[in-house]
Amino acid sequence: MNDLAPLDAYGVLSQPDTLKLTRLLPGPIERIWAYLTESDLRAQWLASGTMEMKTGAPVELVWRNDELTDPPGERPAGFPEEHRMASRITELDPPRKLSISWAGSGDVSFELEPVGNRVLLTVTHRSIADRATMLMFGAGWHMHLDVLAARATGTKPDAFWDGWSRLMKDYDKRLPA
Image (tube, rainbow, N blue to C red; front, side, top):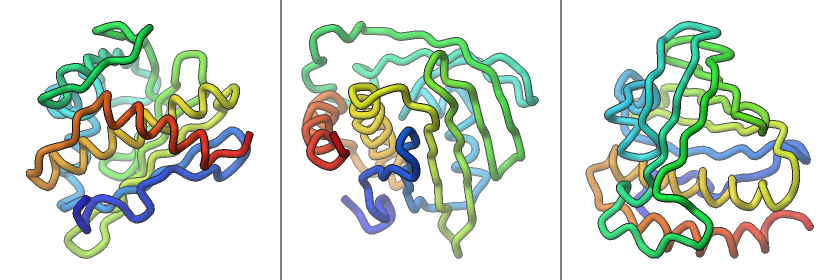
């Protein structure tokens, strides 16, 4: 890991059903905002899909995690090559905050704050239903943010699925039962 990526790379519970993760990334803020909002850039670390920049607008996210890293690592059983989710923008304050509903599992906020020539990205996922989902989301957000940090710093990310599998075990030890 480089010194720009993690503050504490692991997510923390800010409430029993809320996971919060942070990354310190190279700026400017508009560049990181583009990684959140532009499909071609978002596809490099999270999911592609259309996103009209207005509150209430629909968002389609299309995950193809096998395409995030080369090699992708071994995809765990039960995970498809592609996953789609329909969502909505619930809050928008460019280039500082984007919140979207998370189909059947609360909502996610992305907050950006300039810190000198860097940008503090805070991802908060609220209303996570249960511990099993919390573990999957913790490992998923952590690994996706590691890929974003690598893309933003011009370094090669670790194999997505291998990292996700390792992080599932880490989060199982770190999060309360």
